[in-house]
Length: 62
Length: 391
Image (tube, rainbow over all chains, first blue to last red; front, side, top):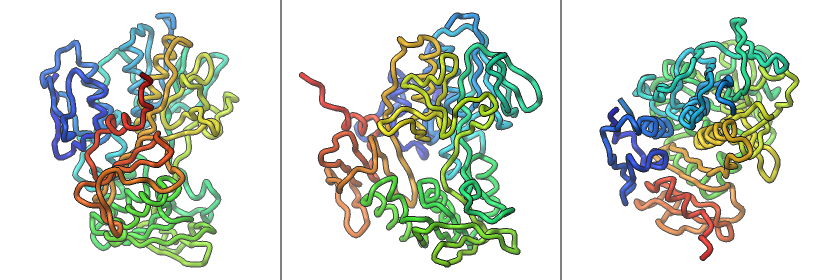
């Protein structure tokens, strides 16, 4: 599974980073940083939860 | 919950899919069924008044990730009744689904002025709740459209913002000035000023509003003081009501939503989460139809199904945000607060916010913080409102 961010949509709410803190974080400017773009199968459910809670549908998992 | 049990989740939006995913992730091995009335997979509702209305988002852009866990999904069929004695859910197509435990995540539907007795008989009333509503409005809207929106709350204001962006001319009508009751005067006035800069007209009358029938088929909005507003499109944005009718035949007391405990339990066998659930507050059970509540309650309900009393009680994060007229407002904690907030960072004058945005706190109320036009992550805003740890 691979995570992507649509930068035009992302507003830096940070609910994704709260749901999957080992996969992503927000930097000091509130920009989302993916720490793992390729998500191992063991973390797939966390990635899906992070995608689901994004209120602006900016985070995608494929 | 014993592993062989059957769990049925009725309602397949954010709360329902989160609940399904969470129980599986926490080891539920029984039979799991998800029932959704909408004829499509779950999607992001906040995007409806933004990208979908603007025509820039297709359904695929806002779809929630499909569930990868083992679940029987029944899509496009509403639950119409509950038989608590036989422990069965009756579906619109006549099927019956047996359960041992039930999760109710049926959400809410748009409230109508006709529900409030404020519409002439037979008036064709338009509301905004699901993707069909958004597409329908997008199709009817165009440059020069005259839109009248009844209800100057969050949804009404966001719809007004989306409509003016598409070149429509918008009038917002309500009992009171916009957003006062939700946000308090300072935040409400900032958004009101932003809307006015975008050409939105406002009218309010404490005596209320009525939808009158007209020859054109589009209703006319009439204020108690006699003023009348006509438009090509008249929208009602007057809140939502919980989807509980299907439970009434079971004799369950569900007026005002399904009153759950702090673990989102309604009875020993039934949990509820999201817009349909009324959560305990100091004022009694209250529905708080917000995005974060849907998944916080769903996670709580999932844990309660699996662990019962030993599951953690939910402390709601009380997080809320809105984007409209080029402004973003993010709030953690209860609003409205009494008194004027202190500007902790940033500046504003004459209803315009400076480039730094604003960070607001309320003296004597450390549990609330708000950011205007500032890219503050919700988690950091929430951290500001937490009590300092005792050292």
